[in-house]
Length: 448
Image 1 (cartoon, rainbow, N blue to C red):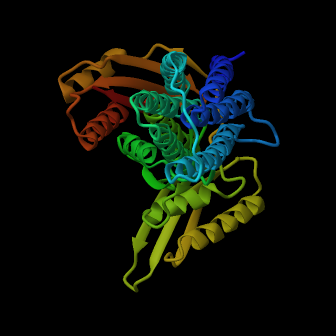
Image 2: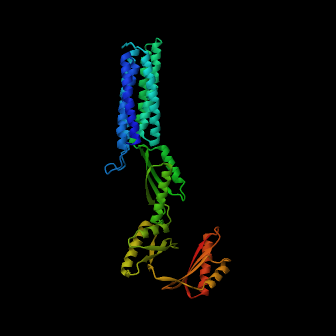
Image 3: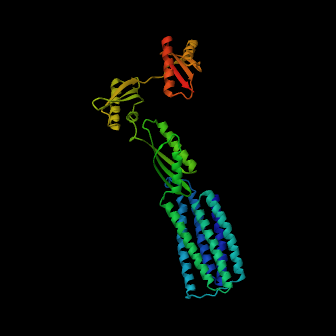
């Protein structure tokens, strides 16, 4: 049995004991206050039973028929409890008013044992209010929270009945009816709050504080994402978030997924145990022409790689777009041309402001065989030293079908601008090719 259900079961037992004490004593001395408290405890018994079963239902995992789980069972139970409380409080208030205006006169014998019973009831009310409130906070349970509210109102009502009996003993016979009326008002107010809170949940009212916490958590993500929509609801203390974010069309699938993961992690940190679903969509309305064209091209089947996307505004006022399209080398020219035409149509549809699309077809580079060999390391190190004043961190040579390839790793200042680092690497590449024509290609990696 779960801790939540154990707490609810203890409440059931406590409610049965209190009903017996209040009802027996109230009938014995003729106290409407005690009888109203017995009725109040009767609703608590119903509430505790509903909570006991509702918590068990809410704890069930999601299934094909209830894909969001069964958490709202607690709120349905709490709403039923509140409805019962309203009816009981109205009945108690009616009886109390009848006594106060003299339509119904009843002798109340405020015997000493009645005061002892009320004292015991107050102690029980205090203990179970504390236990239920702690359990509700720990497990974020709406049903246990409603139980704690009931027990708290019981405590206030029991104190009022105790005061009423003491006043009866002091010679004020209507004090018992006043105490009963106070209990009725107390129960009605508690039931109204309980109904409003649980109706909000059942109607999927957005939890304002939780939504703001989620928005702030997403806003702190670095790099920032474009939050387009955030919808939230809650059930059984758990938050459900539906998030839509926008990313650049040029971002790869992995980058979009990483952005979604970052949003989920941020919301989970702000709202633990929340259920977050993130939808990623391109930011079409603000994306550059080249980004949208690149994304549209990659959306065409059979397209493996697109690069060198160039956009040019011509004198006549039109816009020309060109790109390089790589396809498998064993494709026929006819098949490659068909793919290129599909790509051009897709780009024109995605970027209507483009007047013309030109594609340059290239074969995909297939992996080739290669092996590490010794090369003219000293000459390469000298060239690097003359260009940068530093020796390269690493020099390797690889023999391939296309010739000898040199791989260099350069250490540059971390504060260097990227364009400066690229220019330095390009200068070294050109010098190595010019002075050592036996090297077919030079690959320079820069790092701080």
